[in-house]
Length: 557
Ligand code: VG1
Ligand code: CO
Image 1 (cartoon, rainbow, N blue to C red):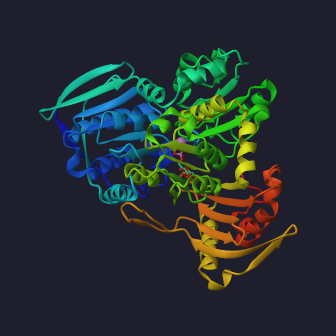
Image 2: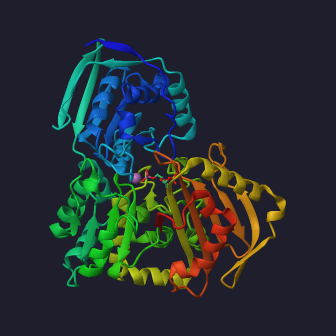
């Protein structure tokens, strides 16, 4: 087969956001749209593309197979030697990261819009991960974007490959050997999990083979990519009954579910656990990197607390017993419960911008073992992505070792460290212009020296600003600087209010408001009640209702 060059013209806005390029499916279906972005991604690799291997797979949403077919044709024409493709084009985001690392490939292309709705009217996305298995850093994504603004042609070869059957196919393209290896989507990932966790101990917990009451669990895959992984891990390997894993068939439109594991979109899990009496519930997002954990009675584990609890209990997991714990990290808006554990354990603790790409450098430098985000992302240096199934297994490891319920574990944690109450308000899909205006006003507020020292009051509580800024991150490993990562108002008692615009939406603007306050003693309060005064202050100071035109947020976490 000989490759050919196809003329094209640039599309506006092929700018990767927090986690790759995410747009409406209909956008990707426009003639040349997907090809342009794939070419920009491959071109950004420069000479490194010649003879390299890449991993390809995604969350199985609508348009996945079409995109995989395009990537195969274009990788062949661009000098890639070998593609490792998940069967049916399906690989969870952490599984891609696992394969990149295991096979030491040049990187991988992940086809996902994560938790955004799928189907013909939903979203699609393309993300490039580098050789370390992690999302491409800013330098690479901006290179991709620059190329996309000037692109005039792309290279493509007329080959096709059956990605439904596991096996290897070889082609001769422009006289070069090109190989597509279709692999089982689950095998390598499960192998990795077995090396990290004590599967025997978790099996005992779930089956009661130690003579104790078995822990009944419910795992909701929300029709996203994790179904096959969850069935294999929790049912086949760990002995949970088949009906413990639900919505486990990856569907192109997620069966109409919104595969976002939070209290709003994963409500069916919450209701089921309330009624079913399971002692543990977990849900994952479309591409399998997010997790929500709940306990008996649907006791909610806030992701910021989840991270801190795991950090406090890493010795329950063989991987960390073996390798030790090198450091901890959270994204800036994530609640600061982790910092208290880090201080107690004398571990280095990093605060990075939102998005997983910033953790990778620290892990590669051997300074970070466990990290997470308030957005239901938890993970470790076993891969370079957050990892939903891993998080559920980590929690089960802690439960197995401590022989306590989820709620008991949380309450013991609060008793030891106090509680960082945390909530996030999302105002999804607002009009962009007024939201930008709100952010620029907030920018002025934090830039104004007189803001520090101001006192705000509500509901009988007063908070005095001790620091105000727009978060700027200097990577301690390569000294790269990332500006404009969120407006912060930090108060004298350590309470915080943070505002950001989302970088993962496909249309309009989504405002995220994060509110946090710390209590040493009053730790059993309802989080929303505890935070009500500060939430009120945050909404007033930002004029959020005026700018978004919304009285209530779309989602409260
Ligand atoms: C959101 C979350 C962020 C997460 C990102 C990707 O980004 O806030 O914490 O890393 O999604 O997660 P933003 O820019 O919309 O706030 V995923 O599971 O969508 O890959
Ligand atoms: Co995701």
